[in-house]
Amino acid sequence: MAHRGKKLDDQTREGILAHYACTGSTAETARMYQVLKSTVRRLVKESPDEFVQLRRQKRKRMQYNKHPHF
Image (cartoon, rainbow, N blue to C red; front, side, top):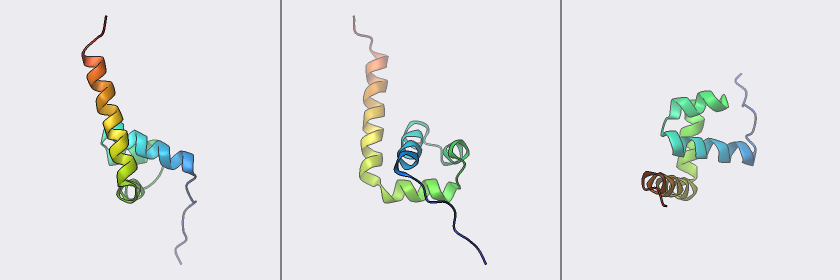
């Protein structure tokens, strides 16, 4: 009989979403947090609003860093 894995705490969930938002890599994120790739995909699918917000923040930071302000 198969058993369920450990339940992820909120901090780990946020970390997974943030890492995926930065890298866009399911495999890399799964390795980093030692979870299955399907877990990463499920979290992204379950939290589309949060994920979209993280991606926007990342894009803003990237644009800000491309154009140095003196």
